[in-house]
Amino acid sequence: MTLQNAPPPAPTPGAWARLQTASTERLHIRIESFVVLILLGVIMAILSPFFLSVSNFLNILLASSTIGVLAIAATFVLSSGGLDLSLGSVLGLSGVVGAAVAVKLGAPMPIAVLATIGAGALAGMVNGLVITRAYVPAFIVTLGMLGIARGLALVISDGRVIYGLPPSMLYLGQGRPFGIPMPVIIFLATAVIMHIILAYTRYGRHTLALGDSETAARTSGINVGWHRLTLYTLSGGLAGLAGLLFATRINSGDPTAGIAYELTAITAAIIGGTNLFGGRGSILGTIIGALIMGVLQNGLNLLAVQSYYQQMAIGGVLVLAVFIDQYQVRKESRV
Amino acid sequence: MTLLKIDGITKSFGPVGVLHGVDFSVDAGEVVGLIGDNGAGKSTLMKIVTGIYSTDAGSITLDGRAIDGLSPGDRRQLGIEMIYQDLALARQQDVASNIFLGREPTRKILGMRFVDRAAMRREAQKMIDRLGAKLPAINRPVGSFSGGQQQSVAIARALTFDPKVVIMDEPTAALAVREVQSVLDLIRQLKAEGIGVILISHRLNDVLSVTDRIVVLRHGRTAANLVTSQTTMAEVVSAIVGGDDMAEAAAHEARG
Image 1 (tube, each protein chain N blue to C red):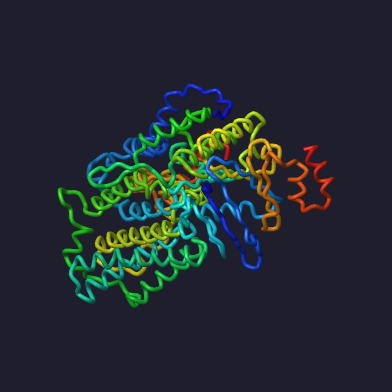
Image 2: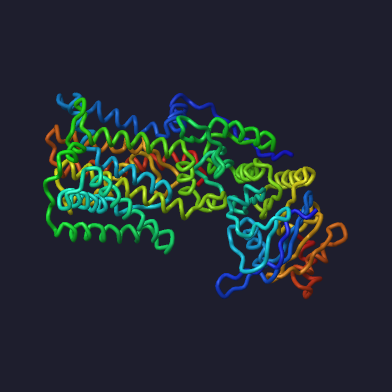
């Protein structure tokens, strides 16, 4: 039994092409994004004498940690072919819920932490239920949740910032074991765990396949509805974790925290090589994406460039990243 | 011995009745052609067999066991595989990921189960070699392959887990002449291995050359159940179109 298919002439790949393949296969990242990050770092190091230092690197990581956790959530949802526009609002809601539980109810720290993450997961689960059970498009559902979660945060807090978290909670946002900020530790630990899940477990492989072709996933026996529900719950839970980092860093539950953060998170994921329409994504890539934005902002800050220009730079990088990506995809695919 | 048995399947999509009490069966080592005009209900019937659609009434048994309530994944586990007309491949994933989608082998590291990529790649390569398919590389996204190569991946996916019944929906529609011959050879090979094959095809010459039996659906009912060796193109076409205009239709079919 022979299926004859004429093999195309196999070109011997050059060193660069081999590097591309190896990085895609082994690390699940596009080598280009890593090169851009390094180049950016080198440029900043040349331009500013303050850039190359451990404390500045920790600053970059600290500034990237909240967005980084949100970007991990965005990567999972986007690579499954979904979309979560409510990330920033859920971050805000979770922080307010956590602060209210800790300050107004005086609950012990573990309860308040669970309430913060749980509030996010619950909001995400509601998203997932409406998307998978009522068949409302994810764009609409999460856009609705963007408004609902933000409004609910304002209702719970009566529109005011809830100050004065207990010290045990503040440690999560302000502690520095071994000189490393806690948010950085939590962010990197989350990244490692989620990278392993997305790249090396059946759950992760099914997430990518689902984003690639829902038909393929369904006919392969994957429970598509359940899988999507867990993804949105996970996304909400991660937004809750980001809300915890945010609130404990600024020592308050701010109902206006995280406005428009979902767009920054999605930007980081896409700069890192996640396909906006699903089927491809990696957490390591997303971290590189978040760091590219972090280095850009940090460097321009050090160079005392007005922040308006930073926004322009990040917008430009986003379009450039997708251009490079599309160029690659078109070269190697018949889509 | 009857392997797959379908009794009195009825299915409507809203007010539209698609199947009205269809009976169908396949024996082990039997190749059955399932044919009929567009909209006759062929694909719907097969998607009911694989569990993608539920039934309104009727029963399905595999090896005498009722499988009506089982999920598509469970039915695959029991040995029902389908090669879809659109192939249902995940185009950005590589060959091994597609072949093992939903059934990835895992190994335990520190109590957690991780996908065993090395085993997947090894087994995928074995299957591709067994089929004699020529793929540019096993670690490329299947979206970068030609139609015939993608077909090979879809077939490999269906055959990797020792199926009992293989359903092929228009497997030759998009293929070059030489590739059609290899698919037909493959069907004969599956038959020799004792696998039940259901072939959905509009290419009646293929159906007549490779099947043992031909079931014709018309408007959601079984219009004919013919033994291939005792029937003719004219009789098959007549069953498809429903008797009227038979001579003209047969002439049209003969012209190809």
